[in-house]
Length: 248
Ligand code: CAA
Image 1 (cartoon, rainbow, N blue to C red):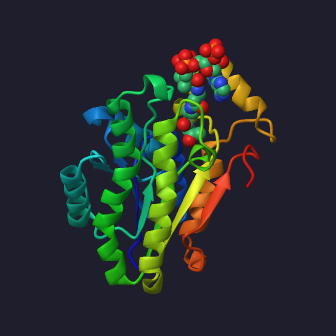
Image 2: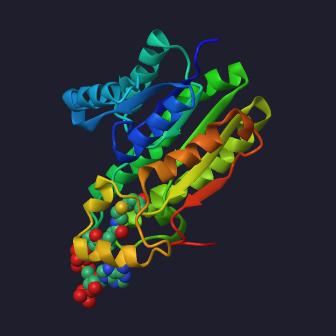
């Protein structure tokens, strides 16, 4: 039997890379979606690095905040590999600033890239999953969608929006073998959190009961759990992995 296909958006980033490697270890043909403002060289470098580590990760270019670009991305995957069995909506950005300074552009950038993209990509793969009678969708939300965060009205709103989307779609597709869940990472040691000023970052770290930032692999393991064949009864759920920083 040919391998199932897993597409990870933002697949070449800090979290994405760990998810790609994990799903590859789980036996999927993994495709890393990337955009990086059209930086194909960066993606190719990622692919070579993966190859050197023994991972065969394919690449698919697409701007997840643009419907036509998402369509072209999925069409390309159809042509080269087949239909997507596992979609991990992982791509996202931050534009942190307090509300009093937030511009419509800060708002629109984050809502489009972090939330509207989840609709676009899910919409483009869902009918193939329903036709096959099997599929796994994992939306990477955030602790800050659960609790809100100073300086992240846009990001918190987008990440909280993912929960509603996940639970609505989970109900629509549950009877056809497709599950839809969210994972809510806490503060993970990637470049996204390195953008936070050092003194604020240190205050946040002190607030994490396990005493450290998470590792990308801490999240990849949760994605692996939710995408497994045996996880078919888990849908519309959210799994938090935040070192105890937020319990509810
Ligand atoms: N709670 C309450 N007050 C706070 C605060 C907090 N958490 N943080 C800062 N303040 C206060 C400051 O003490 C300061 O007060 P005074 O004016 O009385 O001195 C005031 O707020 C500063 O307000 P400004 O609007 O001037 O803010 P700023 O421009 O200095 O910085 C910020 C704002 C850029 C948002 C900065 O606070 C910041 O980077 N915060 C961290 C945001 C964050 O956690 N981002 C997460 C990135 S990682 C990620 O997103 C991944 C994930 O999913 C977890």
